[in-house]
Length: 119
Image (tube, rainbow, N blue to C red; front, side, top):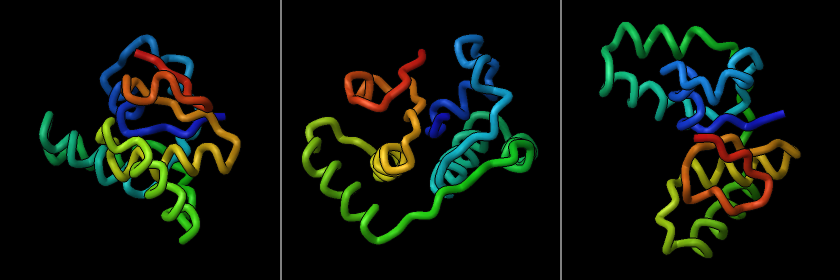
């Protein structure tokens, strides 16, 4: 099973064939991914499209606990030269915690364990 970062969600919506095998599953993510997704779709398309895709998928949202925030913050600080986003750090930590692969096309995560890198 996979944790879908915002990059993966956008690529599925855009019809990237490399993400075809992931498009039928229920996306597992955090609420921050939905915010980023809606923002990206507003920027690249329009409100109607953004609202449609936020409602289209039956997302499974993972809960974020205080200890997850601490671990994600420590992870981001440790890798501060990569300039990782807060959302990606939280997602990565929650993916590991829940024994999920972190599905992304973000090159910054390509060499980390527990990552399914797809371009």
